[in-house]
Length: 294
Image 1 (cartoon, one colour):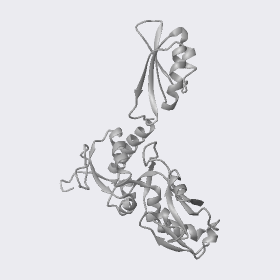
Image 2 (image 1 turned 120 degrees about the vertical axis):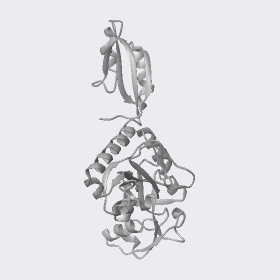
Image 3 (image 1 turned 90 degrees about the horizontal axis):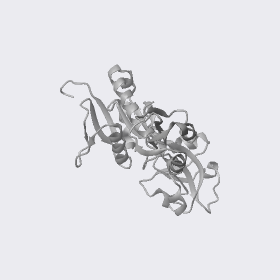
Image 4 (image 1 turned 60 degrees about the vertical axis):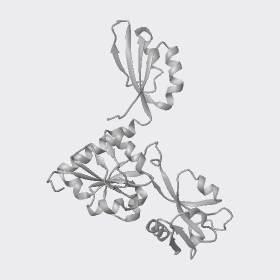
């Protein structure tokens, strides 16, 4: 920042969240380019500076003010114990942007049924802080061991139980593991440094970023439908639309016809199109959406 210009320094998550995050920024209107092994991606906004940071460290740097904001999982933000302001939950129907759970699990044939059964036992986990606080709440003293990966294969030889992250549970089932309890559900979050939120210029920049990212996520599962409908059949068609209270109706050159535009869940379209066609709609166009801003 030697040129003296104001900039917002954003931490982008490196690793499993990286590609989806870059895609999200593209949908929000930002062109972010990662060059080779550089940890400083370019972005087509001269008021923004990007740094690639592993999600496990993101909240710490945001809390310290090294970064003005960043995207990381709620789990890692809690794990660091950092002080930050949460701006948005960025859960979306994209790879690695859905909810995950940190669970306490044991072998299916294990005698352990509750957290208290694990007093004095070995627990392998990547989230030492989260796991320690969990057992403290249950009044249990266990032996916690940091796991460098492949945590699900450690019971029963290398650990009596594990605290591991799961999205679908398939890895747990494949390794014959049984869930005792859920410690934490997590989704990607946009978080910010407190002083950055308090700064008027940075707060304005953060709010615009939040709006555009949220608009891209809101559009992820929806499409636009445009159709020509005879006025005589307009009410029959509108009655079939899932968002029947909010269609846009515009006149056409033919005074007996109107154009109807509506935004619907993409999952409805397959069943909806034949029905509105039978009701009289013609020239139906399905359009992808990049952003929906309320």
